[in-house]
Length: 607
Image 1 (tube, one colour):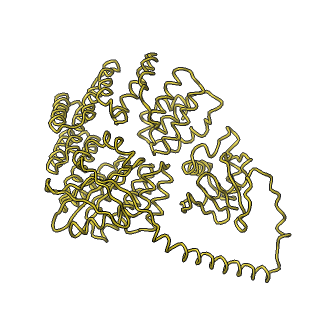
Image 2: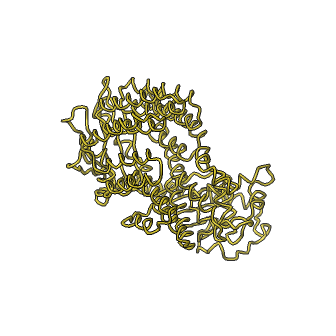
Image 3: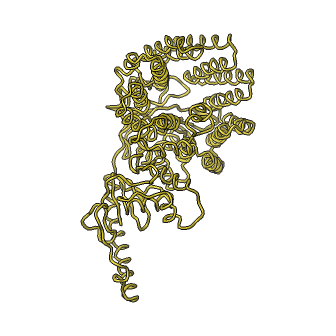
């Protein structure tokens, strides 16, 4: 049977899943669970039923069922499969079913279908053999004919990609690199912006431009040892795509960039809101189709890291390192080692992580990549902090700031100095925390950063404050400075802290006022609405906003917020809540770090 729901199509015979006509990666057992749920969408299946019908006697734990259900919800949304407490799982989306061989009039899967005994449909052996051969030949002929018909039109009618761009900056501030239209791209220059300014003002500038220019390309070009390097970022409505390309000269590097930008997976990710599992599936297919594209392999590695799948991320990072070595691409050898260090740091294997990071820095030095050296030293400072070595922290971050300054990368320079102020506070270095915060503020003003960047200064003073009452004026100052960019990270975090503080003080009018003028339908904003509804004892609004928050957090790949809202839901006593689902999600996805932060709440709920 072929099942169609939303933009998906599933063949229950071949277990092939498609989304908008494109093959979508799905694990074999997940596909078998999906088949079971679709074929009997009016049935609630217990974990035992699923184990017996999908794994068929194999010795596996109930965890396998939870994992498959979680994976399917990641693909289709948490609303696709409903958990019935102490009963099991049932498919919820409307589905049309069609026989694969005839593809005649669709009928809903919930209708009663009476199947004839297989004996009544049996053919004599020889007749069946010839029918199969004839059908196979006819199918192959039809596929070949469709390919021959479709291919020329695909070449002729392939959509041109519209990209607005800011001319690439070069080592010579007076020289910029422009792009010309061709059969693949229609480029539009944004003449009033330059790369350096856009780098520090994208939170304000991109929303102003997005309606007219949804895709904006920017980047830098440099030459070292007779090779040309381009670091680029392509901003889109739902995501960013960034990477590095290498060429023999400026023309060759630009050609490599344009060849890479023809890959359709880029625009799938930039133009559509996709759950992390769907993004990962699309990247996996793209990597299979272009196995030598190091940018795609790097993005795939990062997708595993974002989803907390550290072992798989390490496998992919090692694969990236080998591929980069074979292509003699020093940039991506360094990037691969940087990934490996990040994974080891998250596993708190700090000595091994330092070794990988040192090797990454050596690779970046070979090609004089100052920004990536600066990034690696910021990562090293966190390892130094975990090893309680403040002198090493200070050296790492001051060196990072110096390298960023030499690279004319003001954003990275300020990030390093601000971070040094924070780590000085964490290490009880009272003089240094104020010294470097003052230095950061002076540099922001001297560099004429947009006002919302200055919001970082009171945000750090709020970190330094000892009581919630002392934090309040600093957090309010953050929101004032970020009035034009309410979704800037410091503003989002300040709004959340103020909401929690006002609710704890029963200042619900002040809490309500925080949402005035907030129009973006995002996971963070839905979370604040959930907190407010909970404080106002509005059960219906609480359930609505909580489920919306979880869905949006899942879609955006925000694991921490997904866990936070799941924990909040588990703390409610409401029969409408699928407690089993959210508690199981916490058990599956909660990292050691997140559990340490929420230890008291988890203990009280026996999670």
